[in-house]
Amino acid sequence: MKDGPKLRVLFVERHELPIVAVQVVTDRGATDAPPGRCSFMASMLQQGTKKHDALAFADEMERLGARWGSSCGYDSVVVYGQVLSSKLGALLPLLSEMITTPSFDAKEIERERKKRLTQLQQQKDSPSALSWRTVLATLYPSGFPYALPSIGDEEAVKAITKAELEAARKATLTPAATTIIVVGDVTEATLMPMLGKAFGGWKEASPKRVEVPSYLTAAPKERPILVIDRPGASQSTVSLARVGELRNTADWAQIFLTNYVFGGHFASRINMNLREAHAYTYGAGSSFSMWQMAGPFTVGGEIKTEHTAAAIKEILAELARMRDAPITDEELAEAKTGLVDQLPGRFTTMEDTANALATLVSYHLPLTEYADRPTKVGAVTKADVQRQAKKYLAADDLRIVIVGDAAKITPGLEGLKLGKVEVRKP
Image 1 (cartoon, one colour):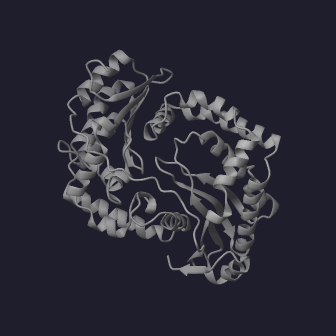
Image 2 (cartoon, rainbow, N blue to C red):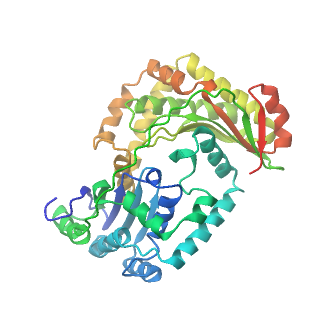
Image 3 (cartoon, rainbow, N blue to C red):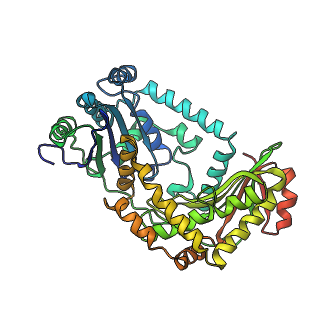
């Protein structure tokens, strides 16, 4: 870009509303720092800079009427803001401050630490959080970036220092790793000088990225059914899980369509079975968490306690049906229509459009990704779906995790004869 920072810029000019959405996105995230550090650091970006303390900074953003914040996932850090287009020139320097000169004030660090420790305690009372944490720990070896949620654990949060937060910032927020996304009511001629003024002085070097080998699952020698005991629970949070695939796989359209039919929408096979046919649940589904490395595939839902074992049996039966026989012509056509019809919703608002572009940055996808999607989805065949089902929906690779009342559900689980039932405390 002329007269601007040496940063990649993605710009979409839209004038239907006097609003501009900005996202500063990197393709580095929690996998590039020790557990919990990147997530903690991203929150601390909101807690003051070397020029403005936390309250003063919040006041500046409030004066602009801005929506703003920051976050860190496994694969990216995002600093965002949205304002009226007339306020864009004032917003961009504040976003730059957040990224380049955070204060990491000691008092604010302790405040954030207490907040996170409270969150971790609260997660012990959340069946979905317990299930997700257990699934990750079951699928990935200790020390692998995906073995913990991005927030980390209590040990990590208690140990975080100011120096580690700064190290996490330097490892993830660097010009070479950053794309600035701007969507809204501004012209290129107006925008580029603003970006140059706000970010042109950002010259930090990018440290060499620590390469982590992609982790491929292997069929477990033993497959215990893990039960996280919650006495008195009226529902069981059931998850059958295995390592899936990374986001930029060439087979993305085939895998996504396979999941759409199996458990990816309301009328999917899993939901029609567990909810409509058997009334075991109010809703069930499946998903592939596709990240820069292979994330989990999970299937399950909140199941009435007394039907826990029966629901697992039905899930295994639906998995077998997907593997053993082609889907119908009607299912294939419905899935193609559903996946393509979702696309316009990705670009409804300025913020939606910025989020869609951020996905391209995080997962190293081409700028033609959304334009090409209808063609790629349209080319998927029934044979493609069955091939992906055989590859990713194999029952032997699945780990079974249940959060529920162990005393009530263990006899039924043992009756399935799928493996030893192992009961753990939250």
